Length: 125
Image: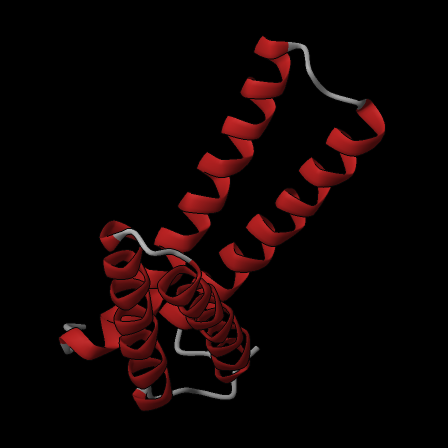
């Protein structure tokens, strides 16, 4: 089954965000172990949250790929958070690179929201 490009954007974006969360969690863990500057009572809950988010985004990715209707809402919620982050990056810094990052992040998130809304879905679980 060949899909139009607009139907590939949401699951690909969700997969990229899942991978990004995995990389950030690994950097957090490795950085803490290498520097030795960590408290177990802080690091373990942080890594547990990353694990929960990674598993959640992986489920959303799978749901979007299978065109399941429940996967749209969490995908849009994550993109709205990304738009909030981009707003802070744009207005919170005077450096051009962060302003460009903020605009780029907002445009990517907006494209993901648009393509997620346009995604046809099934009601299968």
